[in-house]
Image (cartoon, rainbow, N blue to C red; front, side, top):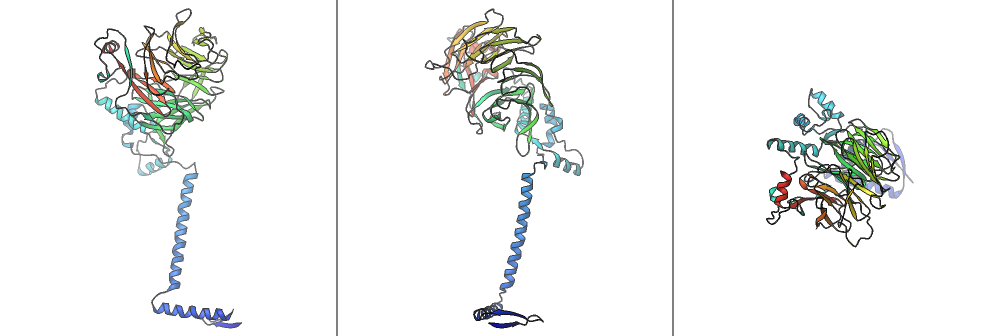
Length: 498
């Protein structure tokens, strides 16, 4: 071992090195001298590199920490979009959007900054669409968009037809793009139309609710499990009510505004105490009243406001099984049906919890799945469908009630009906349109002549069917909603529009 003295400091330090280490130190010293003569300071370069790396690492850590805080802290208020703030006051006036959810951009700069930090919601695509639609309607001299009318270009003229009512079926809407929501897997179970602005709401699998115009405007998960119904609140295009087929809740949403981050509409209120189980059916009658029926064998009448959904009356002692459907004829009279095979007609002015009319074994003992009132035609008529091959037309003024059984909409080879299909009145209550299991068709029945008019193949069995304004029909096939226009003679067009 050798002892080496280092004279760089006033005090010498000693270090024990081997012969090899001494030779290595000498080589390093010689190489450093050569590098200095060449103008290269190796140690200084290494020092700068280390300092730069440390600085960059600290900056990255700071950035990472800031992102993590924003993503994980749900209490941090989201910023509100101000793209439409300059015209938001006009929008409130036109489509009745909530004043408390619109940024008026008033106050000083500091006030604006504080408001931006505290607000959570921004205007949605539905808001923009309704505003543009309102502008178009106004520019067209307030043309009535709710009247049932048909474009003359869609009329099929039949000079040899002398009938007062003859339909030729349906054809797919001209130049119409199918309404599609890729987030829906199995299909839709409910379709509703907002007739003032032409919005379509569809709900179904996965609790998804889709809002369409000519394309998808909004899609969000409203319920756990499947969503049985989604309907617009009457005369309020920015509000929609949904019912959960699994979670048993009813919710009111403001679809004109949405969460700035999650892009879901404002939940105004939700009630999970209306029923003890999933809600199978819901009917929104007007701005304040809704009717619901449930798997718990009950149906309820409730009132709706922005802050609450309140049960006014509950009926839970009549039906002995799942109440599949409830529909209101007016504010006082409703119809119900269910797995017990009974159709009940109820007058809400009567305090007794028994129907004023009931049709036992309405479909020969089968579960009755749907009931619908002929509100645009003979208002005392209603139709029902079940797990059999018939659609029954009833008149509550008759002793027996049954007017006619329409058959022929299902495939003749189907021995047992398993499909939940929902027939509906159309053409001002003069006809019934329906799907049928295995037929892949839409079938039309003439009520007056009590016969089948036609059956047109559409290529699939719809999971849902809904009559729209102007004689149109919306049908759902998995994640798609297709709209069909009526095809009929000039005589019936003139008859319907006079």
